[in-house]
Image (cartoon, rainbow, N blue to C red; front, side):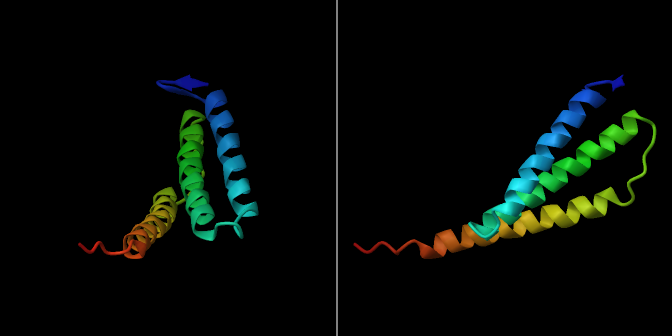
Length: 97
């Protein structure tokens, strides 16, 4: 089914790729926990948007509270990135002339 700029078939392929990205992030969590957690959260956010759009195109919305899920997961990724930025800035040695 197609409606506007998206079609279900393409969205399903996008969802599959996001699921793959999410699974790789989960399985490699111990290598770089902060990075993998951030990637996992962002993949879950994108996947939720994709699922909602597929449901809308099929006229069968069944997901409850997608906004809360997205805000929570995005907040997690945002916090990780802010912590990374602060750590990176504090790890840089001060310049002395």
